[in-house]
Image 1: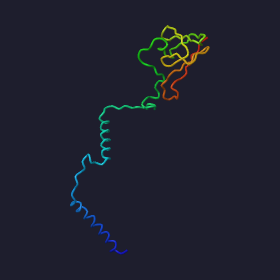
Image 2: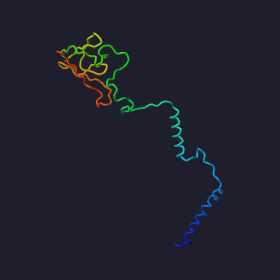
Image 3: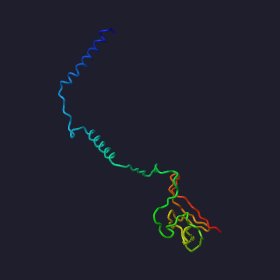
Image 4: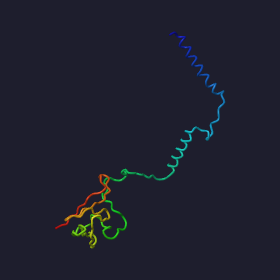
Length: 169
């Protein structure tokens, strides 16, 4: 390659670059398109920006965990879910941990257990399927009563645990 063949394309490119700003200044400038005539992508972007402005203008933040564990709840928190407010009367207002088993009787319909509340002097009869404040009665056998206690512990797989109260001889 000789020196002249290199300079000819370089000079041609330099002339094109130098002439392009002059040509661009001579062309009439078109007005910007109106909002109605804007590209369809521009309207989508405007809608997204308006939605973001709306979200940022609202105060506070809420989290919807859906079917997942709430990551903001403590894993060390208590495992019992104790309802607040006034308790109903009778067996429906008793917690499983407060139940004291007094006796078990066999009837024609099956076993029946006599229980007392640890903080009250009243005695109640319970059968299988009866509801307590934090669970229900699963089974009553000759010397024991099995309860299913509802727990809210995110570290366990089952949302309940079985509590067995035995009758002392």
